[in-house]
Length: 405
Image (tube, rainbow, N blue to C red):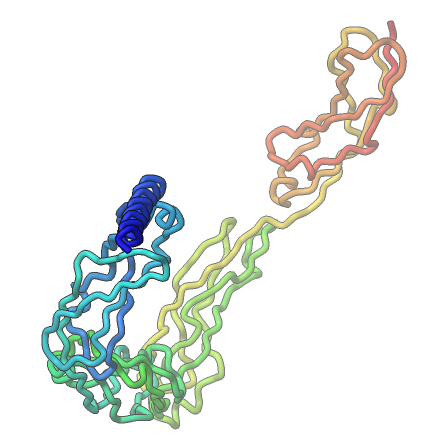
């Protein structure tokens, strides 16, 4: 009996020693280490009934220490870590919320810091009035009768201080081009009693439909304008055309009876083109009909309009016949067939009209040509005028030359 007990003790001791040796060997082969993962994002669980007032200063990432065997750490990434902060069940006030960190791998994890400090306030909601604010008035001759928002009150939410700071919701509209009634979606802006925008409040809707009523004044009429240009006075060899003018209408004020007598289009003072050989811009006055009593109508806007006129030289052609062909590049005897050619020029008519026959010359260059016959392209030379290369044509395009040795 004693021998059996003694054997059992020796067996247990040997087993423990073997386990200890195995642990030591395992630790040496796959030791436990600590790895640090920085900037691990924090997932938050919030309560919609509460507002986090210190959100701007609240950290969004933490450092996580991971303790595991080296074989585990070799496969470990930041995506294996989940850090969570839950304040969904907390009451208003300041709280220390612990950070819960988990991982699916065999490791021990903890965070630095271990908690977040959050300040919560109960979310408040209030109805605030919607008011339409006109930034710029209607054009001359039109009247803004009124503007009506589709909803006169909108629900806003935020902390008590934020909600109480809002006095009204402004829907701002611009009427500087409004000549007829319209409806538009307008962005709502929360403002305080001084009209200063209030931030950090939530609106149940960000825009509101606003119906704007615009009417034309009975004593004011917008009449189209037509610039009067004496095209017949343009210098010979030039053509003129109207480029643009502004404004295109003149606003006239008077009694409805007199406004009804106005023509459909008002003319300007006539623009004389005598001596004009280049494009220009000029200001001219709009004239009211002489048939209406003087002083009974007044031009409120568009009395002076700016007119741009384009002046261009007329494109024409001129042909010079019998132009002698001159030989260059040879000191010997050279015969050209034909010896006279025609030159056709295309360009501005005033320039072509000023050319004389002696201003047009034609040459053939025989430099380097051996004795015998050859076809050479003649070149026209125009003196005293600039004609584009594509506007110069010599007929025939090639001439024959006979070079005597």
